[in-house]
Length: 245
Image 1 (cartoon, rainbow, N blue to C red):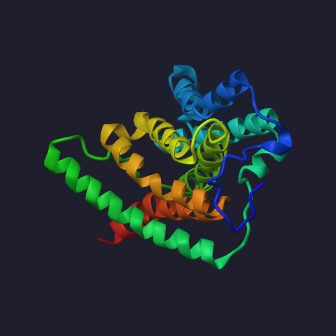
Image 2: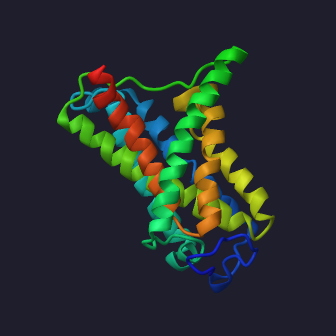
Image 3: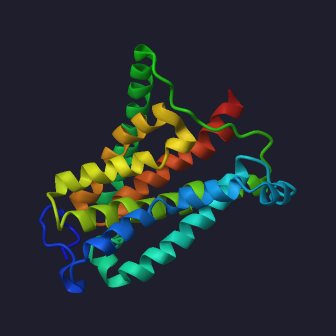
């Protein structure tokens, strides 16, 4: 396991827990798409939708389902990979001001990435980044957004696509190649919700948390950045900035 203040650029891998077989590795990596698959499957069941909509409207219902699906998948990943393996690959949260500062800088860079990609998409005539509309949100709706978009999704996605994908693949390829593959996988799962423009943006944006993870070797900085980003996009913009304008 690399020290907390070093990068994970070497190929030392999960030596304490042994190397995964190709079949088990493929199964683990495939699991990271399970939250999207489960959410889509549940939302496609008419009876479930009709019953659930008595209590929640879209998109809050989809966020609630996605949060549950993420935690379920996380539990399966821990069961299959094991805590020792995941911790050895970066599932740790050392408190360090340098990591928080780096996360803040990366968050601001992510906002710049959004503006730049949106401008380029418009000039190229490509679909814009597709977002979601939040209307008539109750306190319960906002709480669901917070739990799902600001807590569950950033935590689970960072574990899945930084700790798991990069950690597993860097034993078989360079850390740069592993990072690229993880970025593409991370962007791909967002296609159903954000469209082609969103995938292009997320591909570029996810370079930032990936670089933080590779630099520090743990989740403090990338998770902090991800939380900042989602809190800004899902809570601050629709419910504070938009409402005030």
